[in-house]
Image (cartoon, rainbow, N blue to C red; front, top):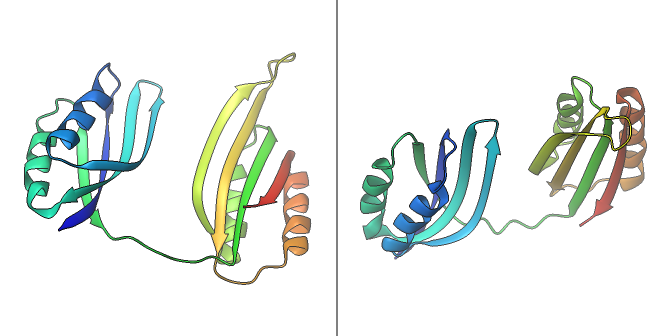
Length: 170
């Protein structure tokens, strides 16, 4: 029987981390289904969803623990086949101000909207080198939403925060 397992690892960045982790997964006949990896300053983090035979999970965990200077957590999970009435992609960019992530996540929380994916970054504007904040979200809900009201609310919130928003249906 094959189970799904989430592996989360973080530690100081160095060459070969992805190779070491994926090599162990491969040796245990695991299959990487989804992954996210990022280097933040001097730290590296990885989040991986794998499918693996139940009887090989203990060996996988033991081998992963041998990787030096890496904190590793593993958690079993199950597949979710949830259908959503609404799925959107929201892109936000503009002046870097405190509270942007909080303000938008607070708004979506009140609507019972799930933030499925979020990526944020700060980049310098091409000519002025002014810091620009960018946030890319995938949001979902199983409830009926009025898209025109959401767009109106998002525009009001974006005006207050000095950012622009672009919402598209997935």
